[in-house]
Image 1 (cartoon, rainbow, N blue to C red):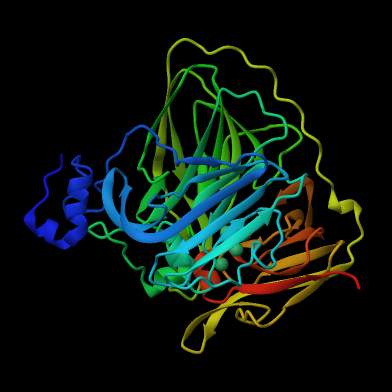
Image 2: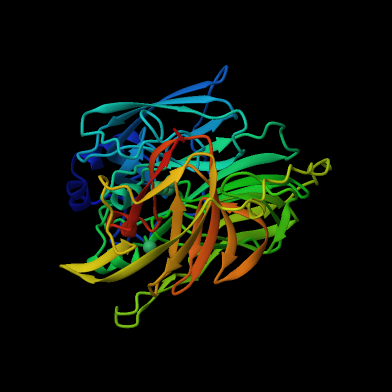
Length: 481
Ligand code: C2O
Ligand code: CU
Ligand code: CU
């Protein structure tokens, strides 16, 4: 047990006492450094909630309170007292009902990132505001052909998103495959970052950090620092990795092991792709197969250059090298051989469709009014304004132009984007994502099939500080009358 000084106990206030009473296993945040987390504990995974007979009903309570982070007690935000919140497992065609209860002292709401569901009414409606002490009943109907994959939920009230996600509000959503895949096991790995002070409380980022997009000092996997995983040789594991960091990009490597990507964001590639590393911008997810080989490997997070903010005195913006995020120890007698992975249907290729409209959206940062401005087509977000009107049932081509000297990972709600061009050059194959990185001073062209759902929703930079500062627009899908 970590000793806790009287001074520290006083700093922790009532929570410190709760912590001692609760755990008795050294939950209190020790010493003067946030960089003294417990490492090497066995990976724990969030509680899994799955529905029955096509319905999953969940109550999610967002609150600030004592939580276990890196094996210690910290004061942060969580859903149902956890960081991450529970994992929701769904099947195509399911209905998901979530009662969101707001026990925070700020307004919040809920977004189901990547789910192909209606953005209207009680659906994935980011214009809903749930005041402190209030609750809201969300109701999402997944279509029968909903793509399998890795999704997630997090708050989305404009102006509060970065603070609330960085504080700990996120959880995984898995949409299962129509036919189960032959794997030894599955794991959910929610990667996030956070900064705590020496009392284990959330520390507010500086103004500069908000401009660059805040990156936390602690990088967590399911709320743990450098957890340990173990497997038998030849095991085939399916890792569902979510980048839930507010701004940090992840470049993941697992040297010594075989990695194959089943898909990024939603849906799956027709065949698993052999990869040496996986880059996830904030908001992206990887559906990854790991075939275990004897030995000990580390899941490393390498540095990613995400441009520089230019006028910021030339200081570049890079997601730093975070070193080992987790360790995987492979030992024992080899597991049984598994059948080959079945091929998947090829997704529709929108390059064969003549777009009903072509648009250019320009993402920019500049000095304006009282500080830095974050705009799309020269405008900051206004929930009352409709920036793009599209027709349900049509395909459009959007060229996302980045006029700034920092990368912006652009996210569109509801409808996935197919990347068809990068910096004016066509791309190979069908790449569908819901967060697309647009490099500094460059552009990416995407095609979107605005099918199935009508209504108003948003697109934005998924560096959550940029989103909160205005880099978001409104799209309305209208049905032909
Ligand atoms: Cu993950 Cu609009 O967000
Ligand atoms: Cu989203
Ligand atoms: Cu941005």
